[in-house]
Image 1 (spheres, chains in turn yellow, green):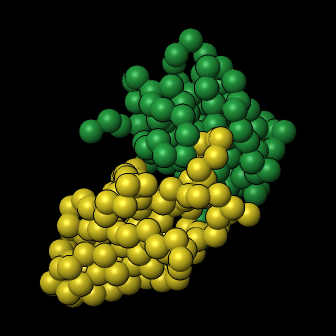
Image 2: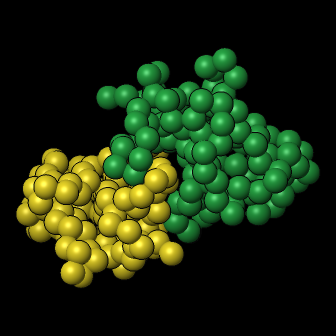
Length: 113
Length: 115
């Protein structure tokens, strides 16, 4: 079945350092991958998603590349900001009939001054 | 941006009672979803809904669960009767389009505690 793994539950780093949050997946069909971000007491919001035209998705300085060979969709940013502190979810949607997302366990990112 | 609202934000209920969780989706969206997140675990799909019908449901969507959206009002998740294992945060989502490429807009969740 489908599954998404986020290996780090907690990541703490200093402002200005690069961010990399891991996401690997298992999928029966060709998947769509998403990153959602949830700030404290707010709703999860879409940060970016994979595309089929090989364009690397970017938003708010974050980017991710879908690597089918390694079944990965890691989230990266060159320089962390204090406002990036949040819970990040990687999610998978199968490219077949249907509309349901499979989520990873989430990574809580804390950026310190 | 578009917002999904959920009412209430917290609900505490005794085991065996009925509870209704309310979701106010994005106004022009046609497809609606419920997800369940038990404390410390990942968010899991429960059900999706379109045009008055359940389209897909997971094994977590027990017989005690039901969903409806009467006359374009709130999209609701009803649990009757509740059980201890129903304690979780329930997230509602909506989307304009169908399919797993479509962006789902989430609400902030309702934390349900069953005693």
